[in-house]
Image (cartoon, rainbow, N blue to C red; front, side, top):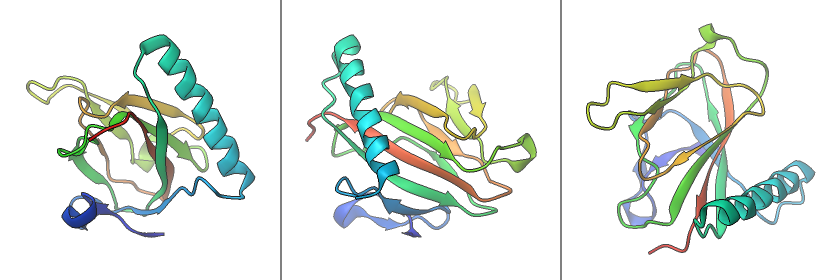
Length: 159
């Protein structure tokens, strides 16, 4: 795993100050049974979402994330300004059962006008959270124990 950046390509910069996680991108050619099972399940979900919503989702990109004690990720959107490919953000929590005092909740801002209304979703192992990448600002609150997840994006053909 390596320290996470903000942005991509030539616009990528260290995330220190904004985010404290380390990540490892998911390899779609992985021989790992759990990774293959995850990618198969997400592919089935993508097909169902396309049938129900006409989102035209074509692929899934994701990484494993580790937030050490004291780390979080400041409020942000998941869609790049220069690329509209990310449609749905996905977070899958991993690890042991979680208690409120562990912190590390995913905060979704539901009122974009004043930014004061939010929902906090504490990590629950195996939980899948989906939200619109371009519309739902979110953050990871400071964690008081190691926090593990898979963060990913269901994508359309973008520019």
